[in-house]
Length: 322
Image 1 (cartoon, rainbow, N blue to C red):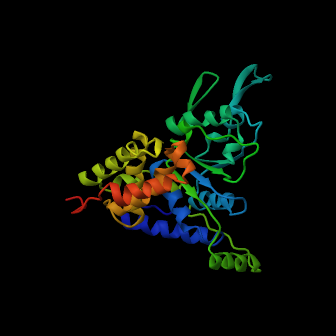
Image 2: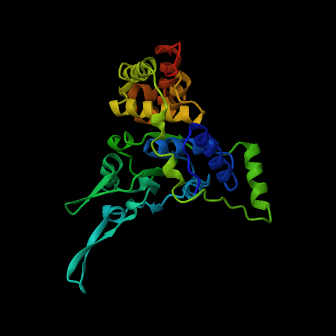
Image 3: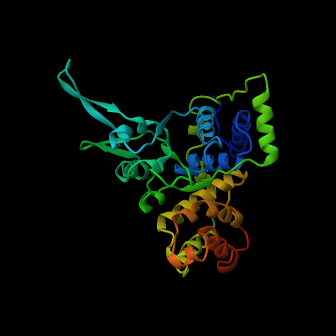
């Protein structure tokens, strides 16, 4: 197994991850970065995309390359909380109850088409996502460390689906929009599929991903950067087009994601561009538009762009840790 210690080694490790995943799935480097931000920070990821854009394949390759344990749950209207968490059963041979653990006890849980599950089942994940533990029939059990959820959602389906509650959306650090490939990348993908050779990604070793967990803490955020994050969050609560602004948790996630973005860029300090890039992934899915704003065709991304470019001034000066 490759052991990562220095910032340079971590940066080289990121490039290796992208290279190995790119052997199987092409054109989604930005989504792979979102995966790595969540891995570093212990955050959760929501991927929204139409069928057939390789959401599941990309997630499987990511977990394979990193050497982390992985479970997938296909959510349906009849999925029960016990199908995710597990349950106790009576062992007649030993005359005692035993726990059969559910798929949530993996380091990475893929919740496929999470909006197909009824609210009761969706809410079963909230404790796991926030507290990194689950309660089964009164018994509280810890989850693996790291543990994070990668959920997928189909944006075009309207029948047989349920909206995700705001409390659960707020627990997703990042929402990624996974659209169609660029025409050149789609052609490259078809050539890849047309090859006689079967392309496979290599695992970088069991537990390779563990070396990346928590390294966002190595990035320094100056006082001006922290104030910038705070100001962005506060401004969302003062916008007339928004019925609900960003929560304090959103500010926390934005700070962590910005630090992870700095590490991904090969720096040990955060700059305003890290915050801006991260904000576009961390903030919009937490905002709720007013009815009037929706009727006028306003989107949460438009509101955030206005905040970043017009309403909140980015700090200037030195951002390194002196």
